[in-house]
Length: 504
Image (tube, rainbow, N blue to C red; front, side, top):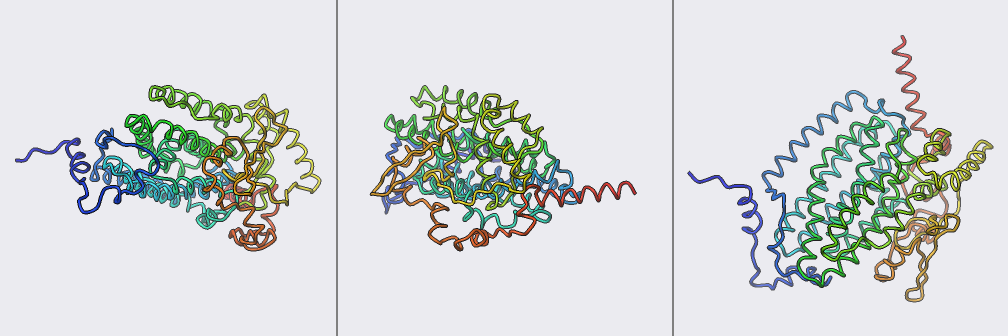
């Protein structure tokens, strides 16, 4: 009898055994994107995938996870799991996730499929194929999970349409548009290393932990279902960067510039998570400042100490990002409170207990800079003059966030930078964003900026009603009263009805 092949042998047959060198076309024409970025590869066979996952094993593992996931989702739906939430107000975090994060999973699926096609090495091609399939599965499971809430709450039904059009969703969308229009090596650094390895814990851990604390076991389950995939993704990210740095010394300055760029771009996207952690969870797990300390300062610091032997230093402006942890979530929540009339979720002012928590977590900044602002807005709301900003904000031409951030070390002054390119002036919220633009101005000069497009009449019309209709955000009388979310009112009615039936 033939001896059964081991995992290492089966992986070798799947990868090196199926690879070939072209004959009637040169390799440079078959893989045209492999050289234009300046990356030099001496030996693709040096690529080592520690998982050595074969396709039969992959489908077996994934199908088992699917079976367990959908068993939990069916149970959640049959038992009206939405009534077990801490508050309906929590659903606004789910809306932010579905509209801002889930479409990025699909973008990653498309991006890794393209990168895999453009990489000459068979090892990374197989790894990129596996991750592309993972990302598609993540998008599907997240959509299926959250679809249960769509039966009962507003703001969830038009997420693909909104992702392409709504002003604040241009922030995550532009991040992946930027990555997918880069070369294959830069894409692998941008998503595989900077996002998946350096920053992914700051995205998924707070969302899944927040879901668990607030009774959303369906969301927790799809997070757990994705965790084994994420471990492979992080391994791919670190393998990519070590492989590139070991292949040729000329790769180091190119990779360092990409690490600097994609750390800063990813950090700006994660500002949405900071706001969610500090303001959108009825039951909070930790502050953004604490999460940044654990998952970037400590874990990221250890990572870059390990990579120092390759000559790679920590990303530029990482000290500034750490200093901004005292202010980031408060400034973002203030922006959304200003413009909540044009958002697909609701905002509110923290109550006395929540402001006490914020004072405890941010002793050096909250009471001094942000409590007086919220107290003034609360007074205006009590007087029937709830504050709305009816002017369109200036946007950063790189990260596309409204220019609401302050100068490093000076929380009373708005940070403002500018560059001139081909006679046009461009604005930025930080030195990091300006540096990224100045290196590739021809790319970012073409950015689709929501405010500019509204002014040019490309977003449905000239007033707010026209733009919201173009967004497919339906605004009723109840929705304009932002003091209490319509979702919260509906959820409280259900809870009261359940209590009445139980009493009878």
